[in-house]
Length: 150
Image: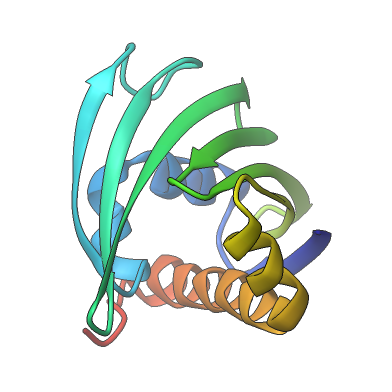
């Protein structure tokens, strides 16, 4: 499954990019985040790998994130892996004006187990809804420096 989510953020592209690259900011816009730990690579550079832990209700999930491409203030791409899903995320930032940025996020989910393939077929809107929620929450954080409700 592949789809694109977009949002307009009333902040400069430099500010958006810096806020997104800083893992310490994830707690402010990624609802469900419990913790993250650096595993390998130089922080903020291609090849950096971190482990991110989430709780969604009673369900716990660990995700391995790898930065796959960076073009400063333009492109920030990741691969995310869980025990049953591979997600390729391409993030593109476009300058609308000096204080406005368009963030386009292209997500491609590749199930690695039958159960996750079935889940994608039965609940495709859930994936899109979660992606959009993170963009909306990031926008709120970036524009107002406000955290999402925990």
